[in-house]
Amino acid sequence: MRTVLDDALDVATQTLPGVVACLTSPTQVLYEGARGVRSTGDGREMTVDTIFALASMTKPLVSVAVMQLVERGALALDQPLNAVLPQLANRSVLEGIDGGGMPILRPARGTVTVRQLLSHTSGYGYAFWNEDLCRLQDERGTGVVPSSWEELEATPLLFDPGTAWHTASARTCSAR
Image 1 (spheres, rainbow, N blue to C red):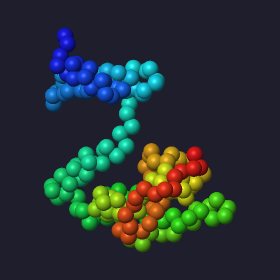
Image 2 (cartoon, rainbow, N blue to C red):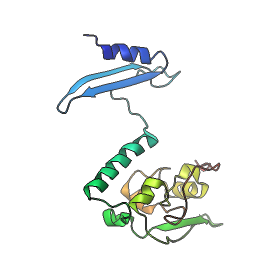
Image 3 (cartoon, helix red, strand yellow):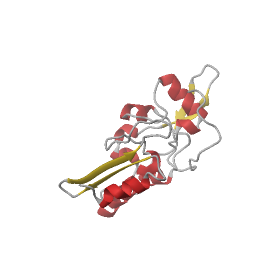
């Protein structure tokens, strides 16, 4: 049976290559639908189980969840991150790569806090915007974005916690 949601997906594909929608109640899936293609010029159909790279779209959701925990008293904004995630204690700062391709690391001055994570002042950064971090992760065979706790533990900070704001730079990851 065709629904108004099916019609809405058809309309959406007039301007988008492909769309997926799902409507649920607390106990069941009420609607699933997919229309169009995964990528222009690709031809592969969009399906309800197509995987999307969400990237920064999760940041607002995580931020709201963290603030709800703060409201409930389960977290504090200025709480050291290692109180919640002890494996992320004792961070190092990447100061560069030496002539032999080895990282120049030093202990971080200070600890990362929940507030710093939310405000991008923690020292964590992205390898695709930092050539030295890109080279280091390329040497280690890890991804541009850590995909496990072990990779995150091994990823150094780009600056001391709370001393700067991480922004995109013109430098990109050319080692890949």
